[in-house]
Length: 620
Image (cartoon, rainbow, N blue to C red; front, side, top):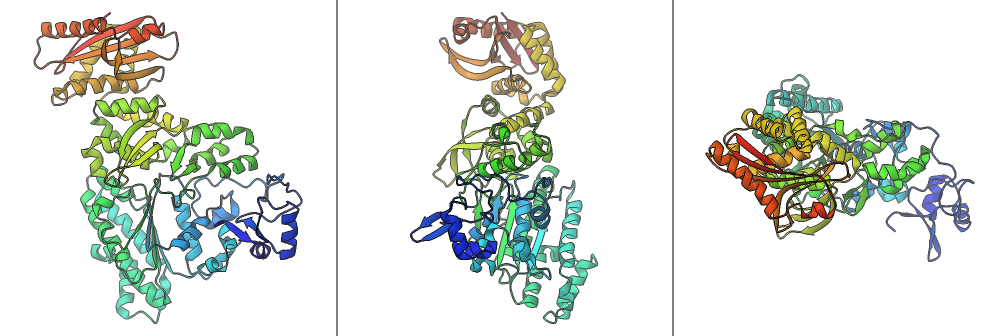
C-alpha cells in the first residue's frame, strides 16, 4: 500500500477526470490496478494509460520516447531524468520523508548510483530561481500526494562531492578540498547581498573566495555556511556529502591518514553534530569508518549499509527494472546473460544488478565484459593479499571455485584494520562490491557471521585479473606462469629451480619463518591465473589430509598432489630427505584415492621441502 495512489491523484497526474480513470481501471487498461474496498488503487509510477495497454500489464509500446541514449557517466539528475534513459529512484525521497532522520549515511560500492541519487535529493529539496518541480512531476514521488510535494524546493542546500579527491599528498588533498568548499561558497553568492548577514559574516565568505581562509576556517566551513544560509533564508539548510571516504582511503594508502581523519572529523562535527542550523544531512561512501569517531556524537545518525533493508532497492537496478530496460532496447532475449554477468548482489532483502555494468552492456551491443573493473583501483586489497596467510588464499580459492565461505563481517571496518587484521578483507570485499551475502546471522556483538560468495561472472573475472594478480607484488607474473607450466608438465627440475629463484629474489628471511608461509605461497601460485583445476587445501583423502590438490576439470590434464615440509637451518642432505618424506607421505596415506576414484591419470605427486630460501623437490 505504501507505493499505491488513489484515483484522484492519478487523475491529477495524467490530466484525466477521476471518472475516466475509474473506467480504465474497470476495463483492465491500467496495469496492476487493484480495487481496495470500494476504491481503486494504482501503483505509483504507472504511466498514463494508452490504447496499447493489455490486461497483463505488459505494454506493447513503451511510454518513453524511442531511442533514448544510455546515461553512461551521467550523475546530473536533471540531465539524466530528461534526456537519457532514467530508472526512477525518486521513492527514496518518500522513504526518507516518512522517517526523517537528522543524518543519513548510505554505504554502497562504487558506481552504484550514489552520486546521481544525491544530486536527485539536491534537485528536489533545494531552493532555486528555477522551477525544479518540472523534474519530478512525471516521477513516482509526485504521485504520492501534496504532503510530499510541499518539501520540494523548500531548503537551501550545501552539496560537496569528494569522489575525485585522489591525491598523493595531504597538501594536494587539502588544496582540492579547499577548492570544493570554495566552489560551494561561490554557489551561494546571494549571501554577500543578504541584509541578514553582518560584515564579519560577509568577510568570511570573501576570505574563502579570495583563497585566504586557513585550515581552521575550512574545518568549520559546513558550520559557517549552514549558519549563514539559515540566517538568510530563515530555514536551516540540508548538507549533502558524496563519497566522503575517498580522501580517507587515499590518506591511508599514501601515508597521510591521520591528517585527513583529523580534518574530516572536525569538518563533519561542525556541520552535522548538534548543529542547530541543520535541517538534514546526507552522506554516501563505501565504508562506514565509524570507529574513527568521524561521526562521534551525532544525534542518532541513520546508517544504511548493504545489510539493511531500508533503501535497499534505490542503489543499483532491480530485476523488474532490468527487464524493462531490456525490453526498451529490444534485448529481452539477453536477460539471462545479464543475470549471469551482472546480477547477484543482495542489499538487504533486495536482489540488485550492477547498474554501471548493465548500462555499459547495452551500450556495447549486448557483448558482456567486465565493465566495472576499470572504474577504480584495489590497492588496499593488494596490500592485504601481499601479507595474506594460508587461510586467505584458501578462501579466495573456494570463492573462485563458485563456493560460499563462512566469515565474520564487520560493517564498520576501517582501513588500518584491513592491514592489521588480514581476515577483515572479507568485510571490505563485501561492502566494496566484490562479494555477495548468501546467508547472514547476527553475531553476539552486533556484527554478523555471513556466508559470502562471488556475485556473478564479472566479479569472478575481476578476481582473476585484478585482485589475485596483486599477488605479483611478491610473485612476478612471468615466474608464476613458468612455475605453473612446470607443475602441470611434471618437470620437477624446472619447478625446483623456479621456486629457488623466487625465494632468493622475492622473499625475505622473515617471511620464511613458518611452514604456513610456504603453504600460502605455493597455493597462491596455483590459484593466480588458472581456472582449469579445482584447487583444494587441507582436505581428507585416503587415510590423511593432503596439503594441496589440483583436480582437473577436464580429462586431458594431470592430477596434482603437493605435500609441503619446512625445517630451519637444514643441510642440503636433510632437505632432500625431507622432500622424500613428503613424497612418501603422499604414497603411504594414499592421498590419490579420490583422484583415482574419478579415473584421473596421470597423477603427479610432489614432495616439497623448504628451509629458509632453499627448496628441494621429490616427484613421482
